[in-house]
Amino acid sequence: MTNNQLTESGRLRHFLTIEGLKRPLLTEIMDRAEQFSSISHQQVKKVPLLRGKTIVNLFFENSTRTRTTFELAAKRLSADVMNLNINTSATSKGESLLDTLHNLESMQSDMFVVRHNQSGAAEFIAQHVAPHVSVINAGDGCHAHPTQAMLDMFTIRRHKQHFPDLRVAIVGDILHSRVARSQIQALAILGVGEIRVIAPKTLLPTDCQSLGVHVYHDMEEGLQDVDVVIMLRLQHERMQGALLPSAREYYKSYGLTEEKLRLAKPDAIVMHPGPINRGVEIASTVADGPQSVILEQVTHGIAVRMAVMSMTLGSQQEQEGQA
Ligand code: CP
Image (cartoon, rainbow, N blue to C red; front, side):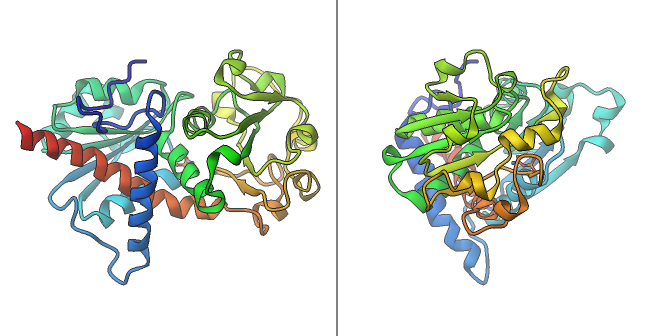
């Protein structure tokens, strides 16, 4: 896929993928999110940065965390937000994606936040929008989920500060996970010391080694001395055919229990992008335990999404100023 998300001066015009981005830009997103996170603790949780802008949430796939935190982020930046319900929209009467898009554009929208089950959908939309419109990828098929990766990096930085010193393990269904793909790219760009993936062979992409990760099939081995454990959900909706033994067998081999977590460093943090499946990939005692930062990830999603929205629409304003 082409990386056409930057302006000529290297600013974010769209946010479609982590791939190809440079470390200073990822650091800028986290620094800006750091500033925005304090707004959530004020009595009036709003700044006027995007006043007068119209943001449309276009979710063609289900979501709890991403859609609501994008909406809150936009509202905290004082933008007007519209949530298109795809099930009750004219898309269900056969209108094409591009026709829906052009109709929404004609309402003077400034940004589309897009989730779609097809890899490349956000990039396709970005290629067809008017020059003043920004597109943010809120998850496309198995391809990318860049704001999730950035909120995960922000959470890691809050707890661990120095990326090169870290050993990070990502466990579970790597093959179908857009989150894992974006996380691996972000961790590599930020210079993380060692990135491990832990999964059965059937849940790993064939090009896994080329991603610059260390592959483990044995969870006890892979968790040794890691600083961060990222658990993933089994993405049954994207699986074709039987890739797994029973859920019970999977939990026995790849479920994160307190006993297995003791193999990681004593101060290791446990992360999960959600939705979590208790007793399938993670024990409740771990998900709710003292090392879990799972709900903190959700909180940080608001500040990180505020950062990305303000940067993309800010670069548009910069360009308009130069024109
Ligand atoms: N992590 C994540 O994308 O969650 P939702 O599917 O609830 O948005």
